[in-house]
Image 1 (cartoon, one colour):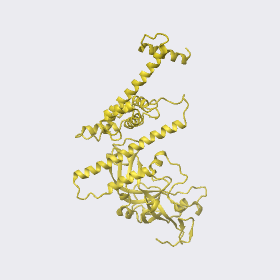
Image 2 (cartoon, helix red, strand yellow):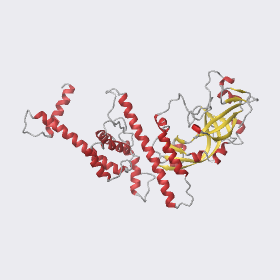
Image 3 (cartoon, rainbow, N blue to C red):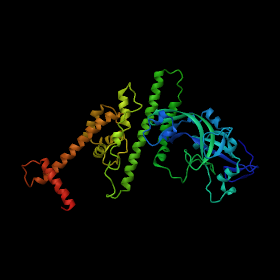
Image 4 (tube, rainbow, N blue to C red):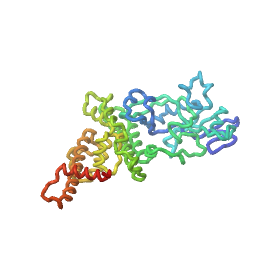
Length: 428
């Protein structure tokens, strides 16, 4: 679309003959994962939240649906989000411009919904471009956040999908949910440069993670017309499994990242708590509450769903330390994730691998349910613990050979030697 402007403040910000501000190629929304507070979502999704925030997916076919794109055309721009929606009753009070030429981006911006914003209110112009007459020390108000109505569906416990999006307004805000990518840019660039992002944000921008999301989107976009109810249910289950697998991979990468950071930046021994001691020991008991989403017709699925929401207790963390001493687990981690990761690490040992394979009965660790993993986890940790005890006994027996080669080492002997060692440390 061509516009008549008289001057340019930057490549994407221009002045019209009337003095209005024209902001070109503004990303107003994006596809991918968003973090929502449970209270921002319908009760049926919020009730199953297992974290402080709920992951909500915006699939490309939902963000770029013709009805959604058209719903943002001509909608008002506001300074901050109003209480509720913009209507004819409050438009004159709230509107400071409008959106036009709404469309999907291209190339590296193909996951963005773009719009040209024409800002017609003088105060809003000063907020976006302070040098136009505002206070020079003011920071530009450039990030945007859409006000919209939408529907939601649960794709997995604690994971939702947003669809049927209908735009109402576009707000200028200090910090938007979509981050720095959705902001008025001086130049044609939709990628952050100096903005620091969290570990999870960087992970989700990884090409491999994006490929998994794209694959899920393609599966969801397949035409299901004429499919039987059973076929539709199978496709839905497949999509849910993919999302659950992605969520599990994210948790595992976070544990690995924590372990690497602690390895590179070790804490003072006096300040480093033992694994599991920095969390509420009652946390696992609270997680044993009955699953509100449990399927009464399928007790096995109900039990596994409840097991997935449990966090590791101190005993699980200690056993995981035996199987995977190089990984740092906390009691805030998912118990299922801790067991799965520690078993993978311990499988390098042939003896442990045989025990685990016997428990899983040919099922891959990544595909096993939490209850099956628990059996393998307990068996494997007992094997390693018994081996460690045997080594300790052999070492102690070696020390006693010079004293009494014929007398066997008893538990009392081991306790006495341990007590002597602890006394030597305390200076007794």
